[in-house]
Length: 354
Image 1 (tube, rainbow, N blue to C red):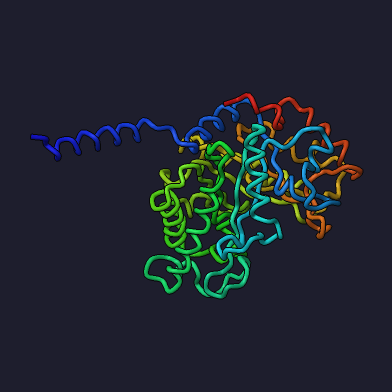
Image 2: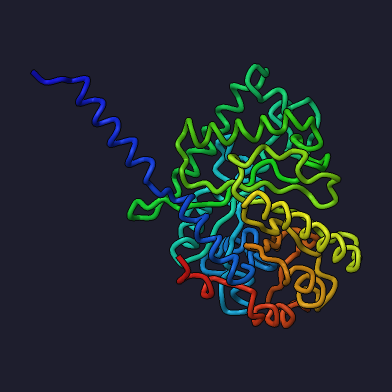
C-alpha cells in the first residue's frame, strides 16, 4: 500500500533542499557587485537612455555615451506613479520604455537601480507632500493600508515583469524610502520605529508575498544625518548601504568635506555589517564648474571601496536639473578625463565580470 504521507514528506524535503541551494537573480547580482567593488567605482546616471540635456525619447542615445563612447555601468530609473497604475512615471518616462531600457542595460552587461517616489497615500499629492501622518496610515491597521497594499502589488508586478525575451529575470537594486532623515518626503523625518516598519513591510510584501527574487535592497540616508543608522531596519532587510549628497550652493569645499566625512562613516558601517557600499545619488546642480568631475567629485570618492556613484538626471525641460556632462557643454572634456581614470568603470569595463 502506498504511504501517501511518506511520499509527500519526501517530495517536500526535495523541494526544500532545492530552494535552499538555489541562487536567485538578486544573490547573483550581490556576488557580482562584491567583485566589482574590488575593481573600481562604477559610474551611473539617472534616466540616461530616455532623455538628456537637449533631447528626449530617442532610442540609442545617452549623454554619457555621446561624450565618452560608452554607456554608464549603472542606470537609474524611478517608479513614481507606477503605484497608481499610470503608464508613465513622474518624469513622463513610459514604463514600457523603461522596461525595454532596463532589459537592454542588463543584456549589455550593465546594472540597474530603481528609486521610488510614490504619492502621499493620505493626500494623494506628490511624494514631497509630508502632511497627513502617511507612514502610520499605510502600516497594518492604518486607514490607507489597503491602498498601500495595492500600490505594492503594482510595484511588484513591474519588477517581476523585468525579463529578457528568453524569460531570464533581470536583477535590480531597489532603493525605496531614501533620504529618510530629511523632512522633504512623506516618509522622511518620522518616528524611527514606524519608518523601520515601513521598510520591513515593503520588503516582506515584495519578497515573501509576491516572490520578487530579483531585488537587491538598498538603504540610503541623506547627507548630514546625525545618525545614519537611526532608521536602519536590520541586516536581514538590507544588502547595500548608500548615501545621497548634492551640491546645490556652489560651495565645492563644503561638498567635499561632507562627502568625505559621510562616505567614511558609511564605509565603516558597511564593513561592520558586511554590506555593499554606494554613493547612491549625487551631483552639482547645473554644473557651474567645468572641471567639477575631476577636481571636486573624484578626489572626494576615489579612495573609498564602493560599488558605484550615481549622478542625477539631465532634464531636457528643466535646465536646473543638469548633473551630467553632455556634448558641447563646458564639462565635456573634464568628464572624458574621468572616463579615462583607471578606477572609473563603465559598461565595457564590467560586462565580463560575472
